Length: 240
Length: 221
Image: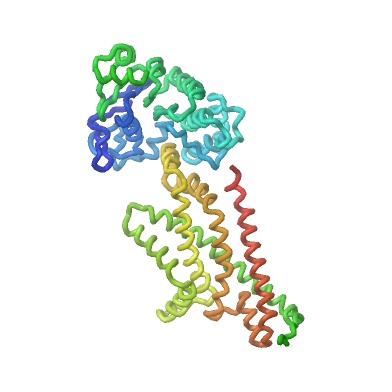
């Protein structure tokens, strides 16, 4: 379970997240939508401690993420994250990209890590690209590789930071399909996304962010289908 | 108007000794590059550190190494340490001096290289649970070394040529030292130094060639 309580986050004088509280249950898929600069991606980076927070608390399975005593390297093993810019390691082959963390962080043997990586890569449809370098792949393939890389750590949670925003339109579908597959497998997921229809399809709950706060939250049919807040309605109208 | 007659035979007779000297030169240059690269990597990370003391030491090293003559650096290491009661051999003073110099120049190259590796690479590595050290070692440094590879080979050549400064602290078994000894005995200056220059050229080529071989992994992609 991810418990976010009254989190404040600033960059210098600019407060980006202004007191957000949100709970994500095991097996739940929560989508965060909202305009750019509303603090949604920043919140995601705070969940696995890639960004420090100024106030409030975030607990993952009861562990305080921003406590100095917390072993973040260990905690991050169970929180996978996929970035907007996919962030493949360009100097490693597709297979090596996915094998690296299981070997070096989890301490698996080379054979085990390789078998695991091959399985994950086949799962996302990249079984024929094992020896390729990321530079030779399309954006969609690189993003699917990034998903496989995160999954190879057998995480309990997956965070997606606008995973399809930097892709060419015709490549968005393949990545969304992969994410849908994960959601159907029961993975606990937090998605920051601009794909409203997708969010409506896969989410258990949708949160609309506005000005660094959760402005409206609820089941997708309510928040997206029939929003209460005028700002939510205006946002949905602007992205359609 | 030109009544110097070349006599190559004595120079060629000295060739075995000069080759032995060339080996010392090669060894010194190679060691100073290996230590120089390792220290430069540490300096590069130190200069990024939030800790002021680490940053200060890193910046101080680079600043002194780059802005003082390498001749003085070797002198000071040899005579300066000697007057403090720390006696080092000519060879060690030379190696330490060039390594100090190399590390400073390389750290500045690496700083530029580090800027060219996107910050998101570090984020992605850390998000997989890697420690900062693992992320640097497995993700950042391999990309950095490829970016700085050509300036790095430049520095390698420079390191080979800088070893000739060992003669000022009395080093007599490297290529310059050996050449100089033959020179003062015979005054066949042109022949010996021409031969030595040729050998320096070959050593520099060899070192860069070896670096290319070792770096194949950097250029796989």
